[in-house]
Amino acid sequence: MNLSDIHHLLAPRAQEFLRRDTHRMLIDGRWVAAAEGRTLDVLNPANEQCIAHVPLAGAADVDAAVQAARRAFDGGPWSRLRPADRQRLLLRLADLLQTHAQAVAQVESLDNGKSAAIAEAVDVAMSIDYIRFMAGQATAIAGITRDASIPFAPPSAQFVTFTRREAVGVVAAIVPWNFPLLMAVMKLAPALAAGCSVVLKPAEQTPLTALMLGELLMEAGFPDGAVNIVTGDGPGAGAPLTGHAGVDKISFTGSTETGKLIGRTAMDRLARVTLELGGKSPVIVLDDCDPAAAAAGAAQAIFFNHGQVCCAGSRLYVQRRMFDRVVADVAAIAKQMPLGHGLDPAAQMGPLVSQEQLDRVCGYIESGRREGAEVLSGGRRAGDKGYFVQPTVLTNVNHAHRVVQEEIFGPVLTAMPYDDLDEVARQANDTPYGLGASIWSNNLTRVHQLIPRLRAGTVWVNCHSMLDPGMPFGGYKQSGIGRDLGREAIDAYLETKSVFIAA
Ligand code: ADP
Image 1 (cartoon, protein in one colour):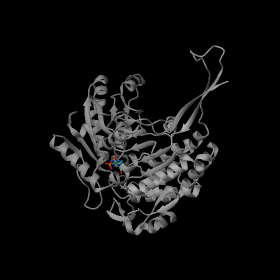
Image 2 (cartoon, protein in one colour):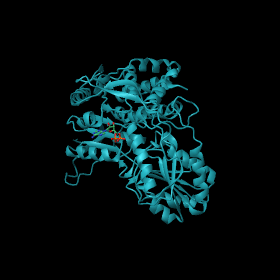
Image 3 (spheres, protein in one colour):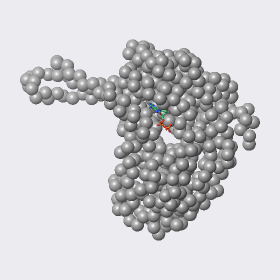
Image 4 (tube, helix red, strand yellow):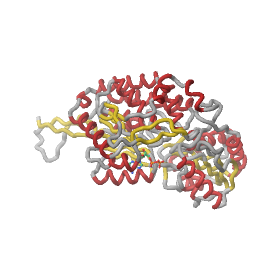
């Protein structure tokens, strides 16, 4: 299937969006070019062709976007909306996203390389559900009242005391390229439910669905300035945004390295910060489970989204008695996995997002080889057009190796045997990260022994990478600060004000 031949098969809204070629970004309710007129090429990672141009925002554009968000928050129509009005707007946005789910998923596929069918079933579906979940939270924001017992006031003095939960202000939302729409929604939905205004910066590799989302936000009727979307790169747009004095809170998902940089910038002015960062999540197979099911689960845990998942199960630990069997099964699954572009229904894995990512992942595989790893499957680039990497399984690695310690963010699995639960708990925790972990076992006692010992924000049992709008997601250790999703997520966009009224 030739990619350029299938454009006429796209949903009308996707065709219409892609026909524009040169896009604009959203500032204060208007679609604008970058102040300096510069643009950024957007490439289709399956064939390396340019599919669109977006504005390359600079500091002046970022400043205009923050000013617009400030006006919307400080006195504009957005700040005067009641919780039920915010709820209604969010529900309208969810409905619009549902109407255009296929078109958005197809554009996501062309921009990021992932399967359009999966983008629709996972990325877009989860986005819709999360917007609806957060719409419900908008009208559930509540403080508390207490009968005061102020120790230094006379016993006869009476006070009415209560707390108010108030929106934190202007939010800078900076998101990565692996789930472009979903990551944007994971920041926008709780921020808007709380009543914050937002400046969203999508990743430079994958800006298109954020712009589609911007159109839907406008169609839904969000007031000007409530959401602003600036397209640009990290140093040119991300850095001035996080450093802007008008930003009250930064919500970032991306690499641990950039997250630390942003955390330091935020600390300078004590801006609130939520960081959802990297991972090196273990998949722990106990020797009481069904080896075929565990192998299928382990393959899914690492190869889903081509390994470009912050909670990807990138370290496989199998109890020694079952090691050879499970690892051989995972390698067999990897070897027969068809690669192809995201609109090809036969493809099970697509290209990585960029040349940079291709080089990085291949570099890690080479480093593994140099350190003595045995390559059971894959091990190199696939083809010479598009950023495809073969699904790769490495054995004969040890814990000091870079491929075991560092986040690769690609379809590369390291597999190691272990003997007992003490040993595997120690090894599972032996990286700087703590995002997720999965346990594969049918023995509840052993599962419960292990769960509290794993230093990770999420533990899955007999599954991996499951997310739910109502379940908090985030990292221990260097995997982040704070939580996305769940009721916890909206808390991160609210301040608490205590009020004392002398009666
Ligand atoms: P990657 O290296 O895989 O692109 P990053 O964590 O650097 O991952 O990127 C995630 C997001 O952070 C992107 O939107 C990117 O533009 C942005 N970003 C990168 N560097 C900075 C920075 N110094 N300040 C703010 N945002 C940044």
